[in-house]
Length: 362
Image 1 (cartoon, rainbow, N blue to C red):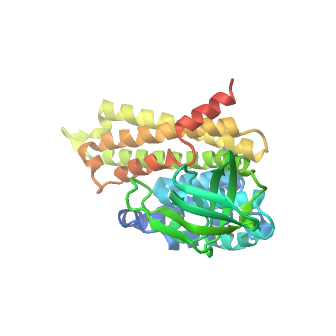
Image 2 (cartoon, rainbow, N blue to C red):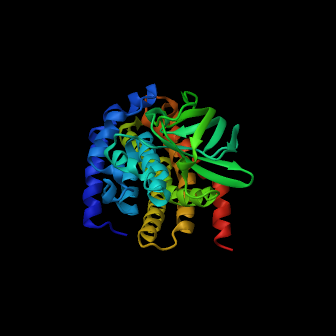
Image 3 (cartoon, rainbow, N blue to C red):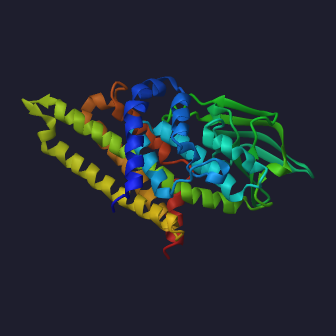
């Protein structure tokens, strides 16, 4: 399944940027929980922050396969940065393009330029209360996971009430919205994840995305596309972990020879490579279906389901190649392992994906 010339050129550009620029401070940013805003701005200059935004609104509108390749290459080096790009493009800009009114779409040019970073509140059954008025929705409570929260930009929030779901664009200027940085997550430390608290927050009716009660449909469409994006990040994590494990195995000498020559190590690398190639084909195939405007949902769900498992298994095996050193923060496989645990549960867990696969198979 070969990539065309345009995608190969983009892939080379992103790979070079990731390995020469993002990699320089990736461990420092992870250790200190630093949101990589300078790198994000440079990616905006390359057009990556406008990947789901049409040119008429200031974006560059990449096809899905191109975006997946970008997330994969960035994810190989810094999964946190890949998560920021996915959230901004797929979980915020994309639903605005698809379901936003013209007033809501005015922000798209700023999103494409990186002047504003869009966020996404993970749907939660946590303490959120909503009441509707004629002009405003009143929201109180909290949501534990706001992706790109550190960027202090607008974000999309889904709230269920009376067996109905509504989607809202929460403007950063709305009073009563408080973000608290999360320091207790196990991975994606540089991804800018915060908690968000609503203190009797009044959200104008005009900030609702789509029609009243249309949130369930909007959420499903976003989630299906996001399954592709998270699969690409899982792929990047898996490749990054494997590359580091192979490098270490070639350098580590025991009993007078590199451990890459040991049968058990070679067997683990064979398993890693096989899983990586399988999920890559699934992801690329689903992305091509999406670009052809064909039904991609089942294949995207299967790609996410298998890539969730593969990322966990491959990063665990990579740690085994390092032995005891793999659990130390001095080596990158420990970071890949932690980031994989976050990437595989956001938006869709494997329990959700099993139901999706069953419902579209039987």
